[in-house]
Length: 510
Image (tube, rainbow, N blue to C red; front, top):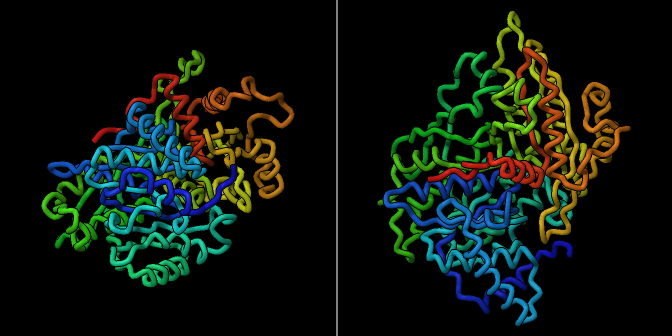
């Protein structure tokens, strides 16, 4: 079954289910919308008393359950199954033939309604105008928001930034605040404003977020962090927002400069809740419960796995464990298009630029573990190029050896249109589109080598790739492994951690 964007089926299905009445925050965008939803739901859960918060994100990471969270924790299998069975039965009895994503969206709505959550934070699946989440009634929407827009899913949303922005901005609702986040492409902001104004939405500004205390630890300590200590500390930020008269100082645990823009959108949403009369019909007193202190607490508690997330992995291989008993440091990031791959590359460059001076050079072995989704007209080379071009941008005082393992990921259940790019195609794309580095990188598996043992089991192949990455490190070298290219590959990584018994704390706790 291919993707068929339409609101007809889900609206028909919702007519046969209990009415959805939950106050809802709706977020669209190409990149960053999941991070924004995670920050907003964490802020709402950090109030005193806390708001009971539902959150819907897609695709799922480890299991279908983590699409639907209450108070930032995935719902139980019993809660999910009970709701899903009713939705599927209703769909079948009425001959609606809803898509799997439409069934999932209705399941989330039903779960949130049954739990009577105070607020739902709802992430658009793809696009906006015809996305199943846009079936939420106008009366339920508190705020809508748009994160960064870039080229992705052109086959469904249009071939230009302007066309894609129009599709995504169509979640704006009449009389309701609409926050447009920082945009790399001016035409995206212009198109979004035009759509929102035509819909009668109220344009609400994002907050202004600035990083503070940029002078950080000694560079040796920073590079040591890569190898031994895990994630760098949360980043101090100052937030100027219309909801509070004075700037709010907070610490942002999500890594990368692009998360500053996402925080601007998230706190812009909070400002709209504090300053716009959107919650009157629900009787919610946001002003009484969201304070500068609770805002900062919620930001610090935010967890969003698979987005520049650090993990220490202890592989079950004695030779590696003896050599490196603290394990290998893995940075997992779901970068899956040219824009998010560029953000990942910029983050890595910023990390490496904190190296010692030329008088005390540092050696680093960087290993990418990459898996891509087949999504024309986007090509493998377009997504890989920012990561492969990184070497030419790294300071000369940092000697870097770069390698890449090219893998398949496990295709997600009930999404037959999602297909991994074969490793041989990735290798061919690298050689043809990025020939300057093709002979300089170590690639795994070797082109003439037999397929890795367990090639039909992506998790097993991932384990072998991690073992190869660990074995690449030489004495005196720092090491970083980056799992990227697709959230589905990141999901395989988390399933592998779970199999090792090392997945505790992935979702955190508020």
